[in-house]
Length: 381
Image 1 (tube, rainbow, N blue to C red):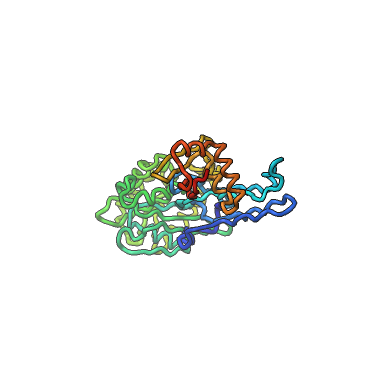
Image 2: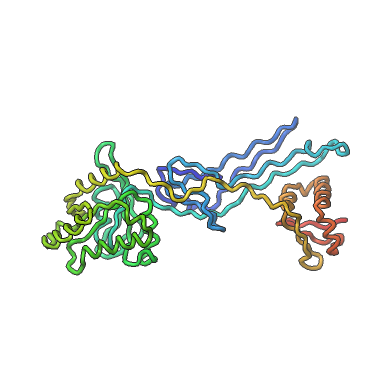
């Protein structure tokens, strides 16, 4: 199975309606030593920004960070050997062949981290969604109560012909977000993938201290990931259309500019100051390098291979024995158990591996059940 990063996909919604993806089987061999055709590759397209993990172990198999990235996460098994392989001086015309080896079956956990050029941050209800709606074609839910936005909204800002960037609001950031408060972990992980930030501050609410609000959010970024606190920021003093106290606005502006931040007075409602803000963001992006991926894994797990230690044989209960480990399960599953000659060959293989001898030592008798993986066989002397 191959996963590919598709730059046109934005969500994992399509995968929610289909949970199983079987790969095509290979073809049967033919006469004159011809092998069968290989099964077609199974490819699954995922959005850029998807982390693919092994659902059982949590291991990161691949981090899709570039459009067009293509990585094998599960390989098919090798084809079975034809009857010619088993020919010998005493077995000139074998009447059995080996079945193909099953491929690797995996349960995958997919995590999508948004890949946006600009992340819009700020406390709830400061106008982040309104800003996204005003500068792009995105249509997020907007209301006058906190936590309106439960998932990040993504939009494309077109500054001019041939000059655009992707912007996303980062909802739910509150004090304690780095500890998970306000679903903080769900949203802070998206900030990791942005190259620059627009920090929206509400300068109109009489009960709020804009400087304190600004510091709270930056502290949460630093506590979650120290590198995020150094990410370039533009500051947008929003809701300027509500005519906030000029002295208060000047105080906030002075504090921020003295800290080295570029400050813009904007109104997400009327559009005032937004052209200057998006133009500055575009210029800043032109000076910044692309983010390096933080998690990558190009290697793919191969089809299952058992260790080469001797098989383990144990008595489970009277009349039932279990064999595991070594190469034994692969040998059995590739044997055509409906073919008498193939079963005789398997018996000889088990003798060579010491399995038959060990079963006798444990008291196995004709007709007893021997379980190897998911296959049950009858013990026959």
